[in-house]
Image (tube, rainbow, N blue to C red; front, side):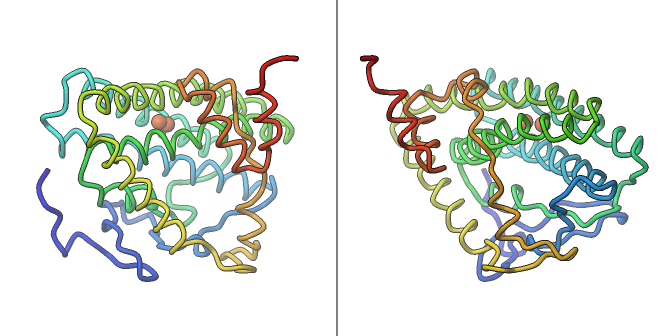
Length: 271
Ligand SMILES: [Fe+2]
Ligand SMILES: [Fe+2]
């Protein structure tokens, strides 16, 4: 890929990020979590904000997959086909969420948006690193989040939106799975792939640490961010298996979430 110029980089809290992609004038683009309007309940305004944020995130994911196609024209054809299909999926997800947002009385640009995933991934100069960070990590996390959100919308008495989360999940599993398959294949063919993956994950850690909310930091609508972002997102084991994470990787994830003993038990041979 071509080198990224200094003009394409912005610095937020000392962290270098790729400059935001173009947005329609209706969107207010912000740079830090505390500027967003995330609510911690399921009030009407919170429901619209959740759909709005999710819609914008799907749009951003489409842009990331599309930029990957443009930046890595020499990637294997079959991988490029998967990425092109992903663009189609993410565009559809954006439209479906936009429609639901309007059905609930919301509108495009109603809440601030942030291009966090774009900012992180678009400074990575290898396709392996981008697949590791975007598909395997961000969208892998979405597998867990979508199952939790399906439950939340059902419990809030909105089975229609809950059903949307389930439909999106099926596609996200495929996006994570093709990245897992290709990363394995690329690593087998060229051990340097592991270095690219490690570079991407290390970069993600740096950005996450640099931009993480400070203890007690409140967002634009008065929600305590450190309390908010730590609400439980339980690992969605079944769907992660479908996305071809190994037992060991799932166990590691559970261990990080404080369920190490359960993970260890699952790996121990039956008595
Ligand atoms: Fe999606
Ligand atoms: Fe996706």
